[in-house]
Length: 177
Ligand code: IMP
Image (cartoon, rainbow, N blue to C red; front, top):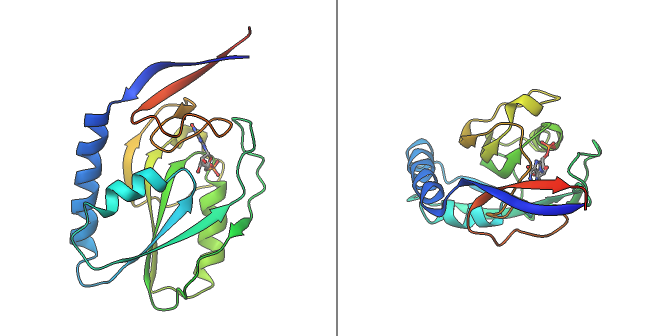
């Protein structure tokens, strides 16, 4: 298959403006709550780094790694934690930072698993959302952009471990050679 990043969906400027707004919203909602921001690796790293610098509240940052798609554009449906959070969630206001919500399987699993650790609250902030692809409903409180059913790359999002470093969001097209 030949891959091309055919179309820019969101430019650097659009991304910056939206991330700034999300940072402002989270700062207002989590003022005095000392949130624990949990970055879902790896795709969210770039979004998280930008978002946290727009947040004017005391916060802590930790990371969780889940099993990935492999080299396909379709979810295997099997989710597992491959790198766990290093601190206790008990009594903490936790915000999961995700790159994109697709089928919802990853976040559904994480919400069920992490809520057993008794956080004071557990919310999701996702940079992108593809609601038309949902297989299980997940409550996503903060969303950067809702998009149509495209496979997108850039700004941390990959296809077969590539394109993460693009500063914009592009639509990946796969066509026969
Ligand atoms: P879900 O479990 O199906 O909601 O998938 C979540 C994960 O799938 C995301 O964290 C991404 O790693 C990956 N993913 C889903 N859609 C895309 C896409 O359009 N581009 C890149 N990765 C994607």
